[in-house]
Length: 255
Image 1: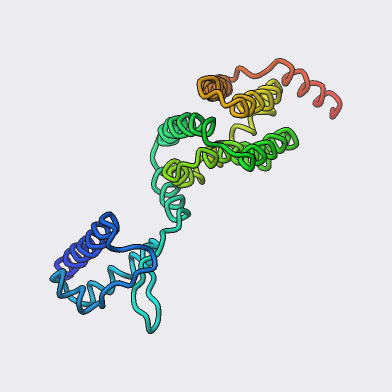
Image 2: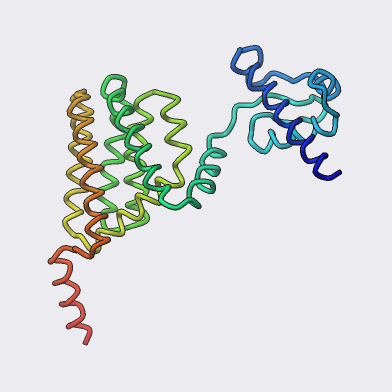
């Protein structure tokens, strides 16, 4: 009996979700529009009212609809942060998934930077310039520095003025910020990364300012490749000699 009820609930949710999806895609429902009553919806879809009610509550959690007192169920514009949380919990638990996410990030940002070279306005340039300055200011701070890196790359995507690319990038924000922080932690083992981080981001910024999509794309891809090389070196223990010398000196002073 419980299994039958669960199956009915799942089927009911799918019917309600499909109903909203098709009408949103067709344009007959828009954010702010009110849905037909639960009773009408249950009759239309051939499911019970309790099932419709539970489905609508689930869709409320996803931010697709909002149930308002004395008004009814209203279609809303989903909050991208919900996707961010979903990606973080769903993908972070899968082995080797972060590498796959990083490949998706490369695809998104490289397309975004090409559009940015064409579409960026003065406000976008100023936002990128502020983010670039922040990278230099936080070069020795893993947390603040990681966020500065993320904000610079985020600014590139926003400056593309592509809502789809921006939403996709935002949906991975939790995983990406973690990746940026991890990279900044490598600075302690690789002091040479400081110049790489500052100079590479500056070159990327200059290519955007000059509206050169080919150069911007190539520079960004090289930036990703160098970052991967530093991570590889960290795994095999191939750290900078200057870092080893500094650690030895510090230990001698402490003894």
